[in-house]
Amino acid sequence: MSSRQILSKLGSFQEQAFVNGIWQSSASQKTFPVYSPSTGELVANVADCDANDTKKAIDVANQAFQLWKTTSCRERSALLKDLYEGMMSNQKDLATIMAIESGKPISEGMMEVKFAASFFEWYAGEAMRMNGEVLPNAEPNNRRIVIKQPVGVCGLITPWNFPIGMITRKLGPALAAGCTAVLKPSEETPLTALAFGKIAEEVGMPAGLLNIVTASRENTDQVGGALCDSDVIRKITFTGSTRVGKLLYERSAQNVKRLSMELGGNAPFIVFNSANAKLAAQKAVMSRFRNTGQTCVCAERVFVQDEIYDEFLEELKKCVAELQLGDPLDASTTQSAVINQRALDSIQDKVTDAKEKGASIAVGGNLAESKGSLYYEPTIITDCKIDMKVFKEEIFGPVIPLIKFQSESIGVLMANAHSTGLAGYIMSRDMAQVWRVSEALEVGMVGVNDQAISCDIIPFGGVKESGLGREGSVHGLNDYTELKYIHFGLE
Ligand SMILES: NC(=O)c1ccc[n+]([C@@H]2O[C@H](COP(=O)([O-])OP(=O)(O)OC[C@H]3O[C@@H](n4cnc5c(N)ncnc54)[C@H](O)[C@@H]3O)[C@@H](O)[C@H]2O)c1
Ligand SMILES: O=CCCC(=O)O
Image 1 (cartoon, rainbow, N blue to C red):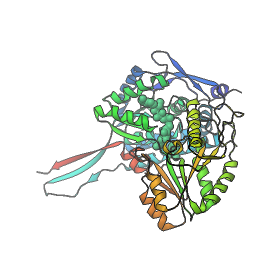
Image 2 (image 1 turned 45 degrees about the vertical axis):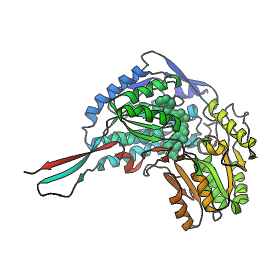
Image 3 (image 1 turned 120 degrees about the vertical axis):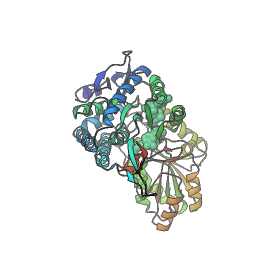
Image 4 (image 1 turned 90 degrees about the vertical axis):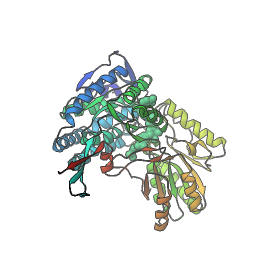
């Protein structure tokens, strides 16, 4: 069966935009093609919305906001619980759509749906605790309180690498706080977003709370521009590259919008001499090769201390040899195609640059054409230096570069010598060292002897050019609220 046939059998498969609870074409009637990265097949033609379609969606979201902001916390919590159940009942379908349109192995896709749904479960609870404050009496004749109110209509712009998790991590707290949304998913993965819209419709989400405006790469700037330029949109919440984040930041300055920015990572992964080499290698591979190396918190730059270097490299080779390249719809596949030709070209360019500057390829280093035109071999590069592109830029592919260091202070210095600061990892059994290095790393999140750091209950986010704000936890809810102080005179 072709991928297109598989998709057309799924109840949640949609190609039209979703505005005001109605499935609709773009006003221009234009569509754009969606291809499967693993097979190259054309799998869908999706509504290609422009600035005018986006303005209509903003108006609808604004009308819905006037009602949604007045609902009780119980009503909002109930909808979030229904969204959680709806997603979990459609776990396999969503994972299948992701496998087809993004190449994400289905076993990972199943985990992503669970992860994504957990934000609705978590914020169903947090919606019930959006407490304000009663301030202490500073004078006898007045009282002061602080209330939390929804920030307003939000523009959500999301990437392709976590096609559903990056939507729900924003939408969960937005709806819990009383906000409504206009979502622009990535042009690479609109089908997952639209399938979610179908699930939301089926669980009875009121019309206009979530409006999905799909757009081609060519129209993305128009849609993003309409969201940033609108005075009605009070917050832009973006996950994607630092380059695009900066554009949106600048464009949102004109009407001083609230911003949440979850941007590029380039995470350091530091293996100290005291680490368990086998465990460190397993964790490095789980982190680096998750989603075929296309994860913002992936171990991108691996620093290994001199005494453990050889043992770690041997263990790493064993773990990499166990990775299974294949069809993303096959349950045993762990590595699949990368998202598109640009991504593949960029990976090849970085590996070539490393080789030209003196690095060695210990494993892999080639296209895996027998699997498909966008497959790349899991690759280990040794003898790297910090002036190589594999260290300076996000690789976003199945390539792990190693650099040897001698002292803790040099390791930390090299790890911090980067403009981004999302996650960082420390492999060490020396607890004093773990404390010192955790505090010294210039990142928003630290994984100690573990790589699975992301979930609903933690404040996910970065420092430096990795972004602004936090997603998940109570902090993620606060990012969708405004504080209002009210003063009462008692005379
Ligand atoms: N920090 C995090 O939580 C996190 C999570 C996932 C991905 N990421 C980052 O995302 C990047 C990979 O995702 P990507 O390639 O989809 O990123 P991207 O920045 O190219 O695209 C992200 C989104 O922005 C849209 N976009 C692109 N140009 C735009 C414009 N001019 N105006 C408005 N919207 C525009 C895209 O269509 C897409 O929807 C990596 O850098 C990765 O580290 C970060
Ligand atoms: O790409 C980054 C998001 C995935 C995660 O939250 O671990």
